[in-house]
Length: 148
Image (cartoon, rainbow, N blue to C red):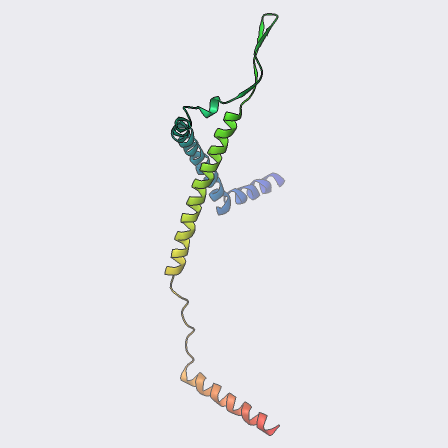
């Protein structure tokens, strides 16, 4: 019995609109991130590298210890790969800029929708009977205040 309640609760949780919207956003965001990373790595960074003297940023590294051969076994060099860090930093900046522009565009569209939305209708005017009763009430109240 506890098992079916757990499954029902999970199903209710998973089928709520917020969770599904978030899942779709994560999937699309991942795909968008790959596209922007490709744009940065394959289009922008080669152009930047060419401008700064034909440098491929992912190849930039500082060798801390050269490769050695010990007992016939080659040990790889110890390197600090700061070029990969620069590449990831450029990726982040461009992805953040693209998302900022997208969110800003969506915000502008929402503001336009709000501006175009019709104003709230005025409350209905009281009928002639209600207006007359209100006037009578006000007159009676004024008379009562004069007697005090």
